[in-house]
Image (cartoon, rainbow, N blue to C red; front, side):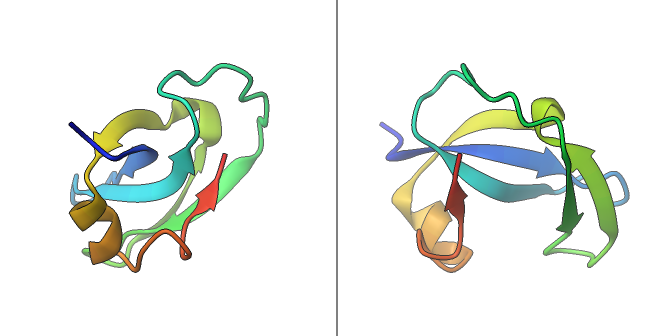
Length: 77
């Protein structure tokens, strides 16, 4: 079973997944922040912007979170 739920964004250039935020709940209830989030792809370094509502909530293991720098690098939403 996954240890975390994370809001993810797929890079429009290379299509690879980027983990942006960790989520407290599996469902995105209460996420009303309509602001844009600037994201730099960790694979191809393409910079793009995406609304938080358009990000996808995906289950992640502890190993996947640690691979990008751990829980301390990501903010909770």
